[in-house]
Length: 390
Image (cartoon, rainbow, N blue to C red; front, side, top):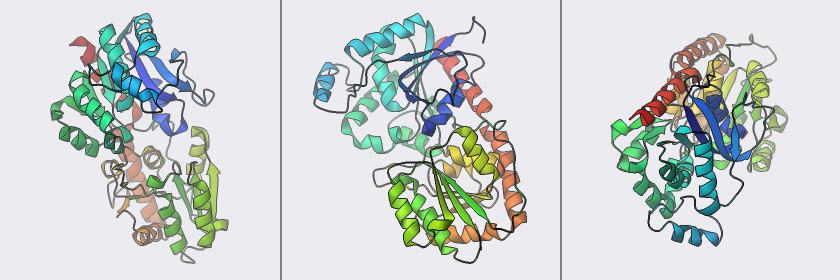
């Protein structure tokens, strides 16, 4: 990167978290701006090398939502109405980093982080662009302190980015003008997820699900749908890549349904390992759910990865997946909480290699044309450059 580039300070809570691999991909794909990172934690550095990108850690894990200290935090921010804004040492640390990096703009991933950084951005006179992803524009709005803070602060952001059309509708409902919202999906680095289709295997179909093992990702519906196949697809297997609080419950479910020997739980995996699993799979599954808390899928990163590698996908009609998948062309969309419909879709693809290949090819083409990470980062860079050139 040229030393003459303007600097953007990218703020993320958990740098290197496997569930947020899109943040790392975005960082290393900047070409017109020099990124520097401000984060609270940094992990998995060997798996996600930053190629010389500077990282500044907050040095504190204080949280404006937790414990008795939240009332002091709220009292300190009473004047601004942003009850999540950084105060004291943390705010001074942010301002110091922004000035030392000579940042021209700030990109904050997630609304909570944007609220936290906003006081420092204003003190340093640097435009802040907020990038919404999921919880921050769905179930988090149930917290009235967050909702109040966000509504008061939205006009102060230089630009607003979201990853899905449902999120855009939610932001409009909060009073944001449509022309202030930029819909820029996380995308997938298609060059690192090349088309790779294994030939039909007489030993059986291999289904794959890559997901955090949490309730709202609906992995239990994938297991139920797989169990419904019975002997219709003899020798078939289901590989579940990922980890989370629901793992033991899901393993028990597989045992209760009599498919434990055909369901493999791999735990959390690196990008390289995930790619290897895709190479040995035939069909990708994801059954995210609109949760009672208000959560819905923002952008299905693993859906995009699977499609890029030429796998047909079976997904639920949830959030951003409706933007990604063309029903009947790149995959099959089924109603939420309908394991029978999902099982039928899995069977339809499982018995028809030509259909799998056709949907996989169209999925790959769609990712290349519309969701390549390089394309999305170029759009994001332009939003950031427009913010500091105003």
